[in-house]
Image 1 (cartoon, helix red, strand yellow):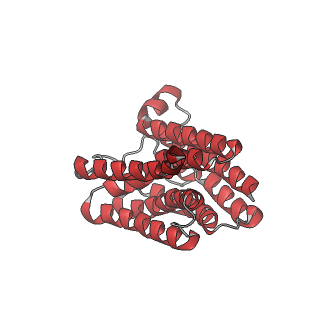
Image 2: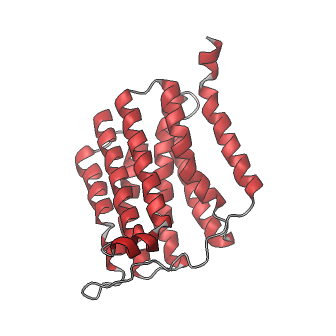
Image 3: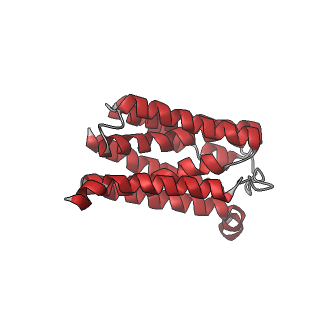
Amino acid sequence: MQLAAARPNIALYLAAILTAAMLLAGPILQADGYHAFADGRALSGLANAADVLSNLGFLLIGLHGLLHVRPSRPAHLMFFVAILMTAFGSSWYHLAPDDTRLVWDRLPIALACVSLLATSLHDAFPARFAPLPTLAALCALGVASVFWWSATGNLGPYLLLQLAPLVLIPVLQWQTGAPLVQRRAFGIAIGLYVLAKLCELADGAILGAIHAVSGHTLKHVFATLAALVLARMIARMR
């Protein structure tokens, strides 16, 4: 009984450890040449066409979620809004990549991450984390993390809010005994998102190897698939 009672605190301990690690690491700066993506090919006058058009999947998933899934939880609604915003923010950024436009790419990503975390926190600690206040607080942190990077150059808080759901949500699902289908769906989504990040790191190498598509374009494809898996999970939860 004592172990069962202590379980819900594990995720909170992990959150504290992740936050402490970020603080101890010091400022995390964006890599030089971050905006120099490998595939700059134009299509019918559209600059960086592959990296721009590969955001179409986010648009379709966001619209599908809002119009057909019609989520009942505020955090799930925010997730689909954030995915829809990602389509526009990322497309706008990739048309002419620079730090100013990157803000509008990173904002919806941060909101999508914290909206998923908000749902899991409420499920695990319903007495401590009411749906709307929790979502509002985490969204504020997500927005603040992006503008903190824009003002200081430090990516630490933004990266922390991307990493936290990947680490904490599986633990929270285990603690609360979430249905296996939900745990499996989120595990698949994590795998796809990690694959997306690996493709991002190998942007030029992938383009050099297969020529047809770059690593960054594939990042968008795999991230879209991760969002699709989560959208299907949310639909089942209704």
